[in-house]
Image (cartoon, rainbow, N blue to C red; front, side, top):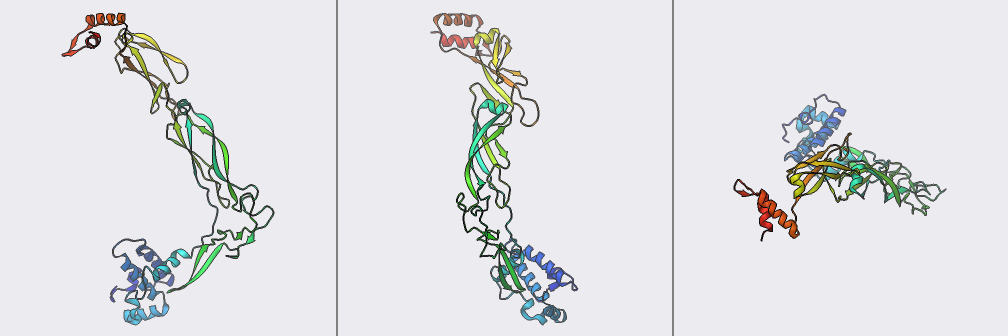
Length: 370
């Protein structure tokens, strides 16, 4: 900062600003340019200038001399922040001024969240299920009711903080005396300490126990999804709420069905005769009953039949997906001599050339001839 820079302009206040206005402006600018908060190249220099200006204008005598004589009236006070390291001496003052004076009285604390894994069947994921889940969690000690002190024994006043729950340390700074307030480490802000520990929880006020809870899995969940159950995590401290329980679902695969979003997929095997001349087949459903499907003559491999509303219930909203039945024409690999002769006769009858390529029965005849 040069001697020509006006200190009031640096703090962005008028020359008739009150001491409260100056302090408020200084706090705002110091927070803005503190090197711990601002990574701009000129932040440290601006921070020093703001501090230097506040050093003069916050002191009534220095401010009066500055108003009358300018920078010459306050000597080095307006020339920079000589003698202080912004990351050392004044950094400590800044922390005390903006951070350390706030009381950090310990209050209720929410308990920790827990995670568990549950394995369910494919059908249970589709239609929903209620399952018992056993896991460990921290609960408030029932014998001492979370106090940590033996039942019937009063808690003693903390000797470290004399019952206030706070440790106060006085610091001298450029602006006078500041008080740094921190939570007492011995009593954790309670103001009371355990002298006769509860034998059940060893004075901790809580203990880890095994619990069993019934988890309701909604219809339509998928593998890898997580259910959140409020209040079933670790117990809170000092009257705080319990954390949550997050249950990750692992869905076992099904022997017959696959899942695509909210649709079920079933692969229907047909032999070449069924696909060629048509037939009626019964298709299994996850609901437990069969659905008849008419196979039209000439049905091709990969053709899909859709059975409406026999899929997965929508997790959010009403209704269900569909059951997609996909045809798979199975080529026989082992034939009796009679079957082989019949297929060869059929191949001779139906074999054609399609756009220069052998037809299906041409290939079939080649496969079984010789």
